Length: 326
Image 1 (cartoon, rainbow, N blue to C red):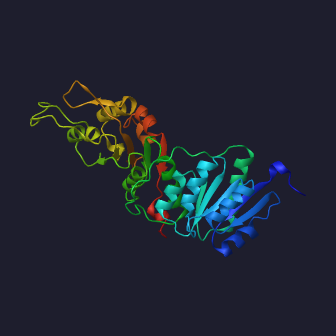
Image 2: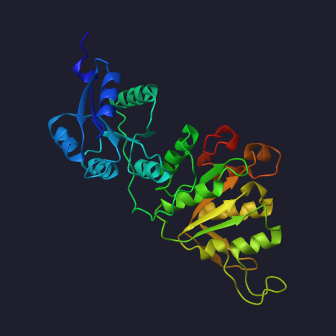
Image 3: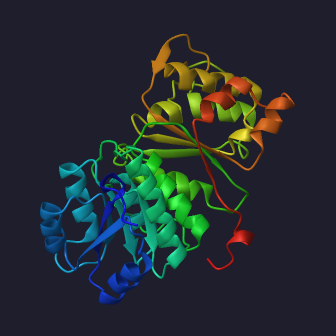
């Protein structure tokens, strides 16, 4: 039975490998799918001019214009067009960049046929329900400092995609994971792909610094605030300017300091130790912990209102034992 016109999904497959185009063509045989193929960005642009394409599968490594540049250009021209990236080079930079540019999803080769089928089904549902994926503003590309977390497992790829989604925003991100899973590396990756990328990145390990020193380290102090405070000193929250501050192991921060941190998140202001004047800041705060903060809050060891503020976006890193192949 022929599909109704309003049910038909026009799909463009852009890949310079004939074998990939053939496999996808043999896989997507639903009557409601109309497939179109191209082996270069130039050929794909011509197809888009002639056909009402709804969804495009785009390879990154192409002759001439690469897939990411094609993705960026088409998102500006056709904000309603869904695009997904497929690539043989599953690097974190490619995944993060693709998601920042508004990709619907990101797959690495070799992919399972089931992955392609599931991706197209999700795209078709989105298209038919009128929920077009619209990317946010795209900041200038940050300098790449190499791959911060290595892995090709599905779990790691999902983390890479999540970084791409949250990096362009100014939202507070809470990074959860066991010790050794790479929480600080993820925080640095978010910073590198954010609008603050060219601003400072500073981090403090809340579990490694005694309470009194931690307060002075974060918030600074005025002259005479305590014995040895012979001059005013800016804390890291102030010194980072408009950059990113990473609070590692936030679950170990003393309750008294949690109240001051809450003020920073709510009002973008705080007082130096021993000071009366408010210091205004415009920073992005990223946090991490290996603790269950919900449990800690229920026990009175962590402020519930601070948890509410931190838990805007959560990234959970899979433990190393679940991705031994990486």
